[in-house]
Length: 530
Ligand SMILES: Nc1nc2c(c(=O)[nH]1)N[C@H]1C(S)=C(S)[C@@H](COP(=O)(O)O)O[C@H]1N2
Ligand SMILES: [Mo]
Image (cartoon, rainbow, N blue to C red; front, side):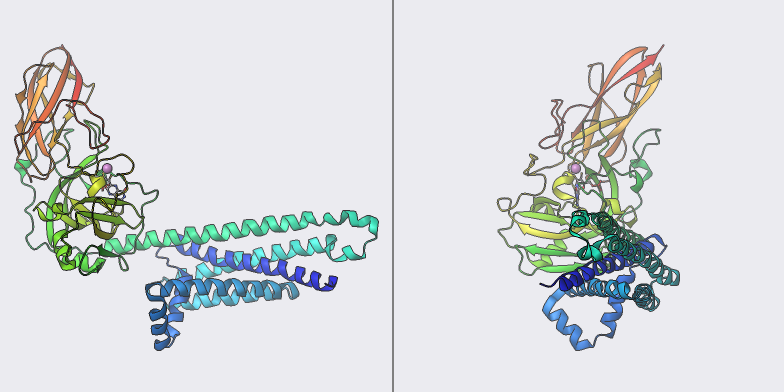
């Protein structure tokens, strides 16, 4: 191969690389700027939308028939490849004529601006500023990269062949500029990817928030009355009957809360059914006419712990959706699968035995908070959360327990996990100092779907004495209790136990949370001042 050819190929690789990185950075920064600006959506997607709009109908239909639901993704990938190819040409052109780089990147930015301005949902400021910011940084990086390369060439690269032999030993000196070119190009590429990813994340989070605030829950067919005053005691420090959404415990494996677009989100029903279904989120919201008061409990809750909360959920009865799909008689397990792949699985009976079992979209009168599963989740009364209450619900799969182990099962947790009867002392706090005389001891007790029949208190290992119970909101919720204790000076130990609606009293035997929930009496020590 002639040295001329090799060197020409070499002179093209570097400007092409510079062009690709600079174009990537321009697009990445535009996405990031759009994510940072209020109301921002992707300029890149805006271009895709204009392309779809300008593509003749039959061509779009062909694309859909070939690629199915992935047709948009295919278009975005094609655009990305096209953009990087254009980037290479931008770089090569800019190496020949300095003005060409900024001008060509400007043309790409102008395409973004024009598409953004034609997108009604995109604020004008974002439509213009985001691509402009991308253009500025991309063009700047291109100049820097081509400058470095020129420096490298001047250093020796181009003239190396003319050098006397003894100087050829120093040919690797240009390695330094080249290395710095690679460093800057590498940093630019990382920055481009990070800003594109970060920008997209911010845009989607923003979109989910905006969409969430625009959602109106349906009016329930038979609205539940507000919780009666008799179901609550007014005692300082006692957990409120209904846990406010912002105080509700949160447990999941999600590293970051999934941000899902309610307009495109759907829940599929798959597996052992006659007719697999897909129900869009909007349809779920319209059909969500059922309310239920349900206490959720985490299997990891220690005795006396706070991983339990009570809310009024609104949704579609799971059985209604399952009946539409037609569950095969052999199916024994319902698996809820989240968008991030997490799964929880519970018996099919739980959807049909009359307990509240909902595909929920509402929590305490508002759309589900993102942390608690927006757009949709399962809420199955009486079962620990890890088997039943899948958040960010994407799929309901009918299967058997033999065929599938949900997320926590191979990790040692029980396959069947009804909530155990438990009770907790909220006041006084563990280790508190109180004055002698009448002291109110109060807390909550819960028993899955069995309801709480009695709560008893024992002081210093003495007889069990019955506490007063607040009215029952529902069999499926916790129940407040209170006990007037005549406190005498000194150190005292207070224990609590509950008896469920089937007459079974919770065990005092202590066991840890693994594999199916902790047991034992919540016990506190208090000091009574003389
Ligand atoms: N997608 C998903 N859903 C999930 C989980 C999870 O890790 N991922 N954790 C479950 C567990 S262990 C519990 S206790 C409940 C908690 O629901 P909350 O965070 O709304 O209180 O969610 C359940 N749903
Ligand atoms: Mo949990």
